[in-house]
Length: 112
Image (cartoon, rainbow, N blue to C red):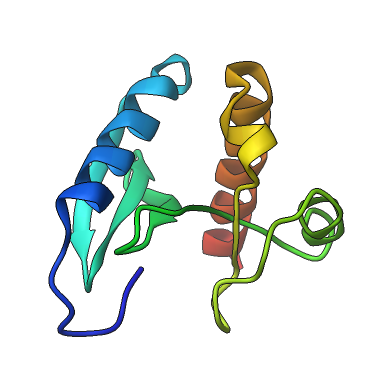
């Protein structure tokens, strides 16, 4: 997301809405404003975020972080999210696969 108190941008909103729409095959993906960006949710579970610059990040864990980093993703501060590389964003099937894994990771973290 962004820095606390930072204004949400139209770019961020557009990216969040577009990403949610592209992930509709997962079921209802909702967008909620959070700090300077937006969270991506499925059944009340946050599995992704869009920062104030419009960059999409998905939830990661120790098993998915190396793949994300190898593809060019970067950690989102100290949060358990990594940016989604352009090559993944440009391919709907790969984006859905990564988002499905991010959702499973977020659900598992809630059960702990």
